[in-house]
Image 1 (tube, rainbow, N blue to C red):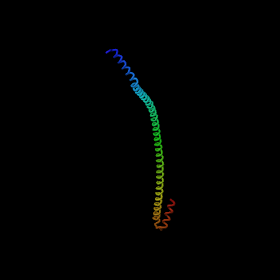
Image 2: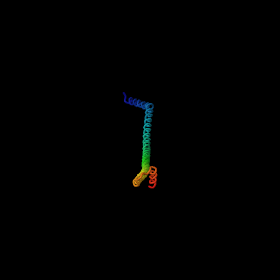
Image 3: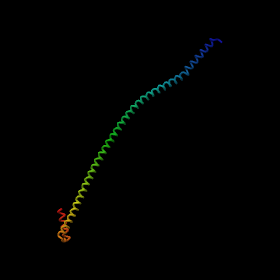
Image 4: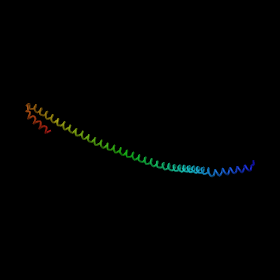
Length: 156
């Protein structure tokens, strides 16, 4: 065998291999490489969009948390105001009730004093009549006795 002929045949086979590969295999491989590059580029773009959306979401979350804290403070302030108003109203009601009880007690005391005075008048007039009857040593008739008692009660 001749080395030149072998070398030429190998060169022809290699050339045919290159032509067949360039014509049939290379377009498929290039398409797959392009698709893979596009998929990687899309993935990187999606990752970048995800980062920006995450940053926006963190900003929105911070804003929502700040708003929630402000509302919570407002609700607490309203609760404190309501509590203070309720305590004040209860104090006013207690004061009114205490004044009413004191007034009722004073009225009851005045009524008891009036009853005691009336009772004392009756007893004093009875004792006066009894004493006068003993002094006079005579019996007074019941009608005169009742009239005398009313007159003495009126004077006291």
